[in-house]
Length: 372
View 1: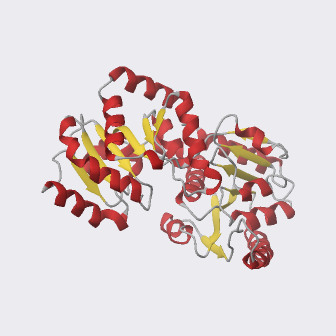
View 2: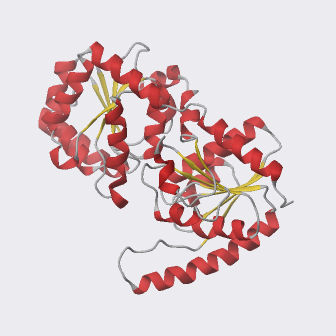
View 3: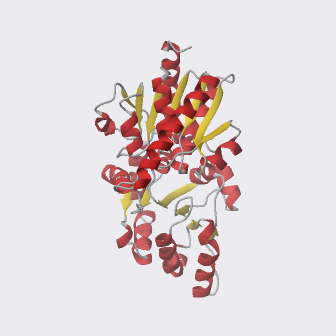
């Protein structure tokens, strides 16, 4: 099967696409891929490192208020459609997959206009503008949250697949996670992550609660600051306490996140959809601190769906403090019944077969396609 993938801007759009490619390759080693992304997005560096062929178009997103920049965006969109059509004619894919971000717009639209089977995957509980636009043209819309199918009432076919990143994480080796952190295999890890770039509010809360961590000496705290906050966070904690607590590791970034997640007992994190798919695949309890700086406040809506199921505790950023965070961690980790209940609820939301479900849909579309 020949597959074109498109998605960009953030890791939450890129890594699901890479997970689809990995599943396709696992099921059919003869699969061939082309990834079409934006010139400026993270995909321009992440995708080539994965080994997939990558080509770029020049595209930007719409501003939500009237702006002359939107006129330029329309012009870039039309140019992107022309460029995408040329790339698609050259590659001759059996199916085209968009995983979100404005770069998907011209790529998936061009494919639909050429009669190529198309799939878009929506990671969030609330659809993005690009996917809402594309849903009227594509063959299939795949959603990550059960019950969010109704958001695509104008689509021809909508299926619930979950997020393909769940499959990648579900098969991760926890022993490699412990080993990479230098911790014994029986450690109970509380992992705190502020997102791929870090989060100022979570950093401040961690600095504030660092002095409390020895009270939970049976737990190992691993805090991933993000590259830009690493030095300042370590210095702030060491300056306040004289040294880092013995049960705290501060890291700038984790390159083997699936293995580390597999070894984790509780996660404190933002509420990006791909990450939530990963933690529910593993049945991880979570304390979620949604980013307030996202379109349509979609992270809080993602987080509330886990909270409603009993899988997560939610702290909004204006309510976040070191004491509040420490109490929340303490309440969960010192109550085996609560931890077990949250874990079961989280696992109940997980879709570890997500990548297989999505690839099965791609195969179905490719087999029935008249575009050969």
